[in-house]
Length: 275
Image 1 (tube, helix red, strand yellow):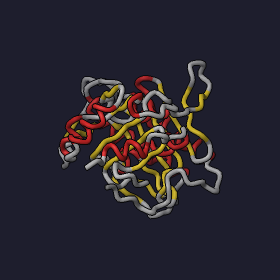
Image 2 (tube, helix red, strand yellow):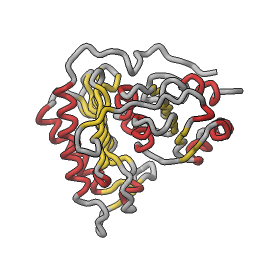
Image 3 (tube, rainbow, N blue to C red):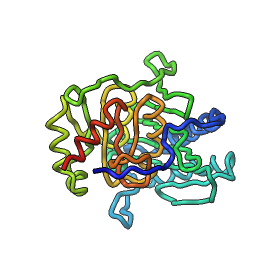
Image 4 (cartoon, one colour):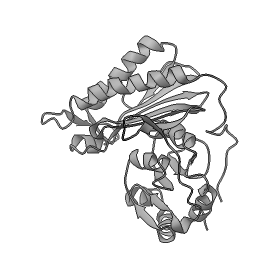
């Protein structure tokens, strides 16, 4: 049985104009792309290990600095929570940043990594940008303004999740077997992959974007921090999807995520939490 919280839902209406914040988030992504791409696939890239044994590169640090510099100039009263430099400021408005989500890919020269930028207001992610400059892709959203990406013709294209309404016809991304094993959820993963049409472990932020584009119906992972998923929330929800923790709560702080095309969300929760 899952335990559901009474916190505000991620898709609750927002009474305000988020267009200036979304425009700023796009410029933050431009600055981040310039910093990250300047060192991508460099032979002399500086790489070190953090205290938690995860990698950090000079590009992670430089990219977060580029974002913070612009925020200090344009939103000095807002708080910032970044993966590399922690929390600064104390405000109901907090920018949540993962400068390079997928550092392991970045340092290996694999182009599937993403800069994630979110604005959370009163604890709810309201603006999100996911930028993958190495493959020339970007996705963005804000509450009430829809979710978007660049279309083949260069014009913004609105995103919409799929209308698949049976688990047996659905396509899912489970990230990695190791994540589910370490979370003690291998039985749930077996039930899931035995019940769906197609399962893959695409990894990191990209499968959430595939979900928002209507190409997947489910993405879930464990051991995620706020900066790993906050930017993904408005993109998924504004595309018509549903985003919760693994236990079904509207939270980015429970160290898990479960995103779906909405119509199947409760069915997936029931399947995963069978006893």
